[in-house]
Image (tube, rainbow, N blue to C red; front, top):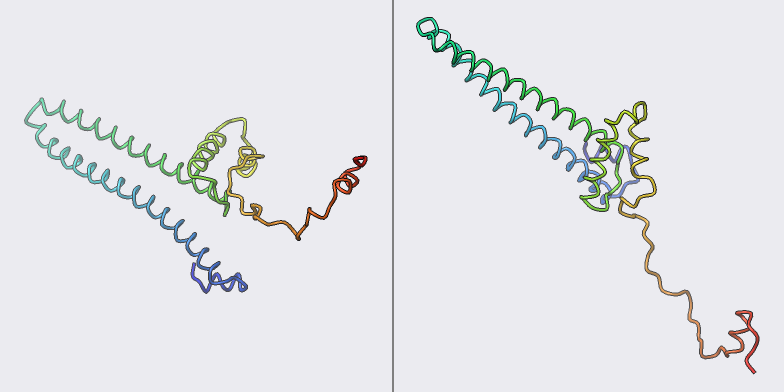
Length: 190
């Protein structure tokens, strides 16, 4: 997203607002790219390991014809490769599910700012747990999120009260005790 695209959508936006929007967008893209690069790196390492094992298997197949004990080693290696493939698939699925949960969570949170990082992590954990819960089947993400955050002070308050001094100069030295008591509905002092 470029500055010009944002300016076309929000022509009244100030340069500071444009900068803040671009900073948020860049941070989100950077975080997603980092997650993607990490997953891709792990997948590449796993693929290299699998390729090495497959090469070893083909070499062992040649040796099996002449040696009987290689047959046992070959079967063990095949089992280990199958187990590692299954483990890599499981990790890949978990990463995809986690990315889906994170995307759904961030979409619902929108531009709200969390009070602190610990609160965000706690609500995210509860959100993931609630999505998986059969009790919430058929409910939308927003409904589940609203139930988790209803009447809770999880966000920074953008409308916090400002510190204002009193309105006007009141001189209490000119007010007598009886005048003050009269304003309060009390009888005068004799």
